[in-house]
Length: 478
Image 1 (spheres, rainbow, N blue to C red):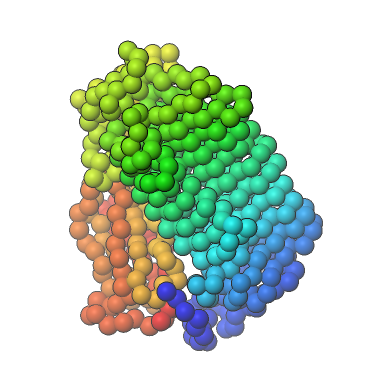
Image 2 (cartoon, rainbow, N blue to C red):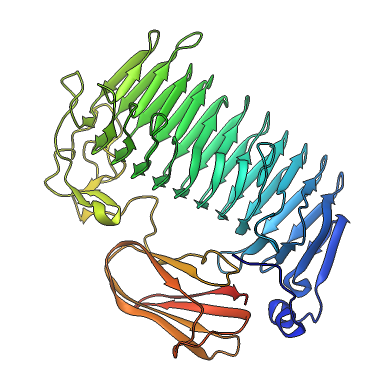
């Protein structure tokens, strides 16, 4: 845990690369922040006043010195414009108390891109991003170590697009909450090791496409009074929830569940999916899915209350399901131990999807599951995983004891990761080995190659392979 510290002049110089002093901010703010003002020490509540715009550029480091909130007021705009290699950091000096998050109050259209949001703390009324009557696009961010009511509360009226984000190690009532009206799009995100309901939606339309849900404790999706929920091409595995169903709950909500791989989830006292009619009843359509290896405690993998119109067809369901188009056959995944749920060439799920569905990209009949088997070239990678090596931002960041460096491989490759100081000197080599395809994590303890504790400062970590090289920044606080 990072305690309160006093930054030295040398460290502040390292943070900004051109500024000798921190920038204290509070009250009304607008205009442009860039890395030359680092670190931005928030010493009171912030507000972008009505009709104003604040642009926060790449590399900005924003540290809340107390339990303060950042308000984006009526018709105001906030643009967080980090980049893949130079994010914007939002953190708290006291990681126990934390800070109170961003609140968009009838603001104008805003973009939150490539930010790192951590240590937002609070009760049910507090969110990392809270939105009322605003249009938000949230893309490319990481949300880690937050403890709030709803991590992202999309509120009423305003549509929200949430794509390509990482949600990890958060403890919340709900990770993404969308109340009535308008639309919600949740696309190509990773949800891992979170505690709480991952998605709650009552939106007019919800599109939940191409996400990975793994290792979470809590229900994956709760739909209530929602007109149209499309749950498509998602990978859902190794999640658990002992207090209710592990994947789906519907309360008078319409679901279309198509081309998903839902495996090895645990709800020992409940079904995997629970669908209850409250008022009018809604249809549920499940097509081209794989449900395999799930643990559930009821007599059936799904529970349907009276009033639901249910159509489950062309699915591979362990234990079976009525209907001649459904199967009960081992899908033959490539390697579930590393999260590879591609189909092997002998899988019975190949060409077993609904014949009236669009063809797979290889122009053959649709396969079951989230990932199709390319019959022209062999196994292809999952559509939400990178086709190239991906090096993620370490977390926690800043850190004072250990940090995790994560990278993802589309194929087997030799990988080296080295740590450098700002003068370009290599201070540690933490791996040089062959790795299989998939996600990998390496713990670094802030020690040099000789085992000595490194001083406070900014360090670079570089990943190299035969065909790829990428560098990111991290901050060590001692």
